[in-house]
Image (tube, rainbow, N blue to C red; front, side, top):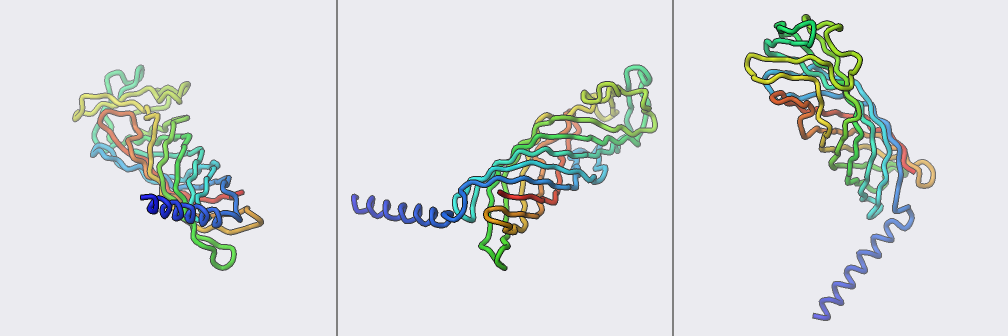
Length: 249
């Protein structure tokens, strides 16, 4: 039994010494800044609504990474994400507003463009290859993100709903109008869920500049995992793909 323990201790010591040797020439922690233009879209899960198309947005933030070896690390990021999520209503519906449309007006051409801002905190596992062509490395990343809603506004387009029929003084609370469908027994407003979980995966290239300073460029796919609209029977997720550009110190 003692021999096994001694043997296990030798193996552990070898692994630890090898790991320390791998990162002896680099800092065990790294810090970085990033900015990322992105393409955003929505994916409805209800037959009553459809995707309203893509939009161009952007996000930015910083990260702190803890290296386990020169090739593997765990990173924590803090990002500000701007997303436009477009929805079109395909059913024939009735639109109500407090003053102008108290009896309801029928329409089938309504679209809702949600302008959303999130504070996102992702935890990512990062991998890099050995250097090639002297200063280049390839990297990959994957993990989970949790986003907290900071702001939501919505642009409403309909042939029966005019600007004076919505609440433009308090847009952060959602325009005050309601939607009723003959198929449903619920009304709808423009409220948004406060939390957005997502799965993140990406990859790209890293270039060594001076010392431990590096620049990188890559693609990141951020896939929403839960409904972003606070409605009873309309559900949709919002996702984006970003061009990830950053610098590491």
